Image 1 (cartoon, rainbow, N blue to C red):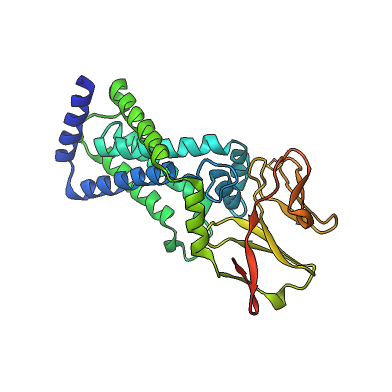
Image 2: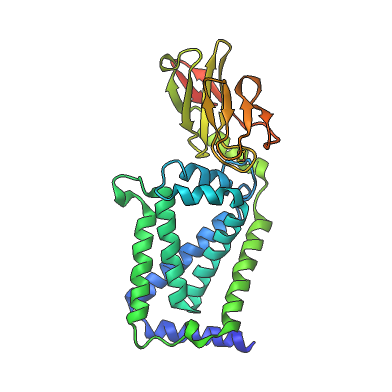
Length: 299
Ligand code: FES
């Protein structure tokens, strides 16, 4: 109880010592980070291999063009642990900032996380001002510098070694993540919603895809790298996300196989993307496509 009343006293006194600009930044950033954690925790696909919003799928897609792809490729193998860490860290940073527990550490964490997201997912967005991650990195850095420069700010950071308050924030973050997982809708329901949203989206003109050709595309609502095939029998497509640990497979025309660069799994695109070589055990996920007029579209 002492730790709880100490947290609330610290939150109130730090709030009073801040000017309006600092309060605005504090509220906006903390609420946004808590919401980001909740968004992941309540997403049934975020920690589920094979789902389009699976963290491993996202990391694999980012690794295609990120300047830190060498790092992302290493994290793909531990995607679930990375996802749990990111989710809990977002809650912890948001809650710590809101309650002013270790505020400079939390602000630095927010800055590091936003910078990492910018380098991973939105580095190639052009013009740059359309990428919100870079703006968040600057906002966190501004808040951090204000905290460091604010001499009147109560000493509620790690210098005081208040282990109990930090432990309570960590427990709140973990608890929020567990509640989010508990209330998330089923995978089936969310998949149905996403499918309904993307139906009819144009992929490529049929005339640009001769029989025997393949076409790489990103599924519009799921953000999944996918591979489209046209044969004499028609068109079909698969998710390019390897069912082993989430790397991105590529079509090798010399062998007519889909090959994963990470651990060598191979899939047969002409036979429902069934596994030809280990270590994957399940076929690639099918992506529904169809011909509509002069276009191949998402079905
Ligand atoms: S991720 Fe291991 S074989 Fe594809």
